[in-house]
Figure 1 (tube, rainbow, N blue to C red):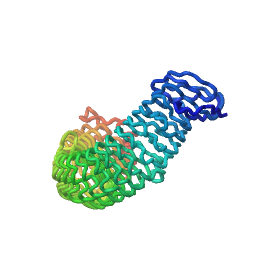
Figure 2 (figure 1 turned 180 degrees about the vertical axis):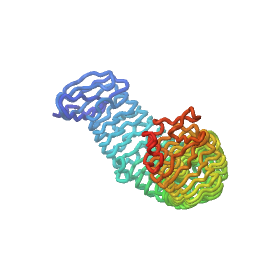
Figure 3 (figure 1 turned 120 degrees about the horizontal axis):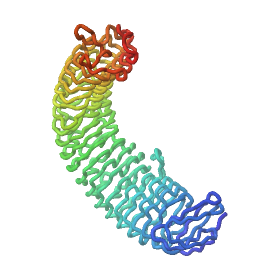
Length: 627
């Protein structure tokens, strides 16, 4: 059923409903100040004074709806999907188009503003957000919206729009925000490179001199290139964050693209995931001397070479976190960050750069205040060595977490790698060298200058290590736990007796040597200096090459109370399980009591302690829970 008895009076706001079923309730998107008459198109006419009035359509069909009178805003509410077309905008006194058709996924077309409908409108924030079937932006749509300041997410997620009209914002000289205006326009999630929107009109922003933010304005679109003059008249822009984020078809950017934007302070993720972008002009940031952050600027992009002078004039930058993460660069130019004397954050800066083969020794020489270098070279699988003095000019680094995690080609470490690190608060070395499978040896006193509080997973899966220096943990007077520190170090054949000698505060070695299948024996005094040791959960679990345990291994560890799976699946063990001699009597771990001067290890806290260790002479004598 279709009832279309409307006139053509351009003062009326008109749209079309497609009602899918009988007795369906539709909601009109009129809002703000409302004093109007609405013709629902099925013979029902009523006066409305409240926002988002509803109407029940007795019969499914197509209906033209007409509104006359005062309506100061359009705003989606209730059932949104019935609107398929706006026929004309009318003259109702509109001042806001915020959320006007937000989520109207069946809206296919809208008209241009021919009746000065938008003369008083100040915002188009999310006006057509998620209108996934909207097929075009009509030329002249915003010509009369000369008071509009906000175009945030106006066409966000409009997947079916193939192009942007050349002079779309020509008369919107008061506009300050273009954040995410065309985010995902013409593209669907995970199909950015196949999208419909491939070009940007050269003069799109030529009159928008008051624009302040272009956050993600073209993110996730299929644009191939960028006009050189696109931002030449935008002197007040401060935010270019995620400007071309995930523009996976973008191949070329002009050298002077940002030359007309001297006020920009953020280029965070500006070219993130631009996988087709192989090179970047050396002078692209030449005029942007006020920038404070390049966080993730080229993360995941296709950049193969970094120009030496790319950041030559960026003296105020404080963050370069993830700046080149996952880029296929082969080298880092010397002096790349030489002007960044204020930069404090280089975390993940080169993480995942799998083709990077070397690191310049002066990389951070001009950055004395850097405090965060976590994961800076994590997953750089082609780096074979680290230059001496890499961190030699820095004294404020807060942790060594994941620094070289996954650097599977790394063979050696310089003696002074952490020489300038100082413990400020809870300094940790979590997963610092995890997965460095080619690492063959460690320098003596590697951590000697830092009284760390954590070594979790520090050398996990460093399968190339065959031995450890006796003073590896020299000076570690604050450390309490060594969780998974050498987990999976299958090449380790022995441990130095003094490994934990200076770790007087140590309380836990949970999973410290789990699955070290190459270990054949343990030094009797390994834990002799660790009177506070209380937890040995899974400490040697899975060490299938271990043939015996020194009887007095835990003699000085009277506070042990948790021993779950400590030696589980150490299937090659023979001899007797650890015991302490008291008045000529052997007191095994499972026999400890408070009366004998020990913290008792209850069955509950010793589950599977010796599970699978059937070769131990006292295996049958152990409580069932222990085996």
